[in-house]
Length: 272
Image (cartoon, rainbow, N blue to C red):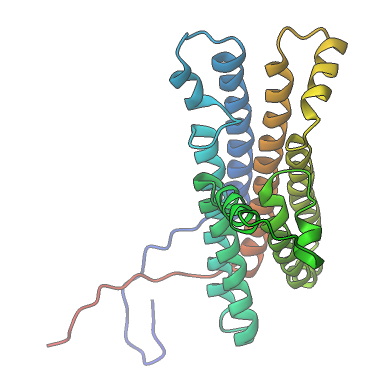
């Protein structure tokens, strides 16, 4: 290759990545993985082919610290990493404020992945509720209103923070995704998350067992566990699907803004 000063430089080996093929591969792989997890959950928990609870827990979608939870966590963290890459690629073409906005969005998704596996929001919710209710004091105002929540404690103290962060992220990303005709991924992805959390809220209600028994009798299901577990599986699968759709949307965004970008890796050597 001829340089501008008339000297020759060695032709470099350039590796071309077809992002559309990779996005399609990632999407199909994630969907197949989720179907595989459902099948394994059914085999090991509904059919109970092994009379050993620890084997069942490995594939139990309804439990934390399982393979399904690991998959869901990794998906969200990879989504966060993708957002970081978007911020880096755009760093020279956007304002410093927007750059840090993208970084914060990536950190949010990264935190969601960590939180999903470690059950941080559930533990913090229980901790806050215990600290507030350990005294006999009658709470009024905002705290008194929140304490009337009939479901899990994390919906009282943590869910509003997540909801606010999600709304801010949606507003921050809307224009950028709208210009590239990618808003459907935001709507579908966050929509799946909202529905999943709605199901989670109902699962924490005091009278939910009566509803499970009603469904059990209506469909002549052998065990109530079959009903309650199915609701939990639907909730977790919706979360996974929502993360997949968001990840695919951000990958499409990355593919568009990084089109033609070349990455050059250099060995850090000192000249004599």
